[in-house]
Image (cartoon, rainbow, N blue to C red; front, side, top):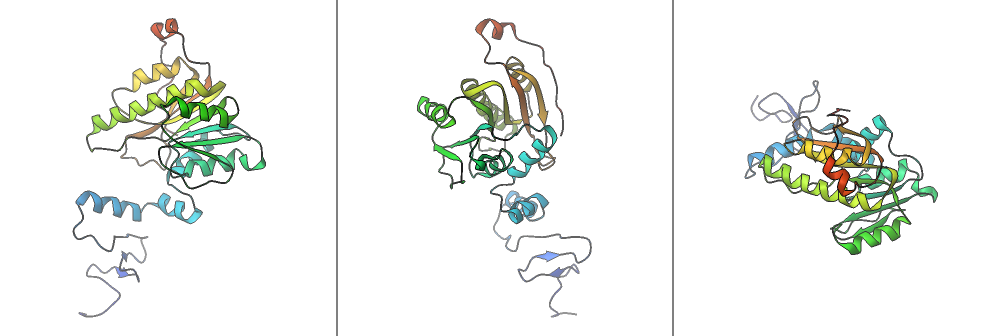
Length: 262
């Protein structure tokens, strides 16, 4: 009947926020204000509202959805252990720092966690936070001082700002990945691990060869919280042997593993 409140034209009930939802078949939320937004923004907002991992992030007080991805990868591959010395590159807003603090028991007074970012990050109790560019010598020296020696793990969730052009985005993110690996060469202890975000694309094979020269085992992981339509994946190298010599680099190695979904 016209004028009756509580339902929209589709038969869905409306909550107090004005968002619509299905009363039985689970939530189907829509942003309240869509007018004037680009279609891509509308899709992003709708996806965020209906993403269970976003809801879990908020409910648990995590700083980012990426924190759940790190938990899922560690649940499967068990690379975070108590009292590790960990460096988190591109650590803003701090979601990975929260996970590492808990799983590596840094709060117990053992182990070290150092976060580095171009942005100022809100403090995470127990973590040492540095602001700067990891390509600069000064930051490398600060990390060595903060980590009190060599690191057991270098983590990187860095990704370049996307342009919408897949090939360009891939190349830019792979560039950051190589920067992260070069940094790891200089701070990782023998036997250490390297975990970093990557985008699937044409440069995967060449980069995997770089990893195979340095690590005993290399695998690609896509955690459940990483959206299926995304080209995002993560590369995990374990058993760091050190950066290759010029002779070893020229000889190259055969890939040891391929893409391995979690």
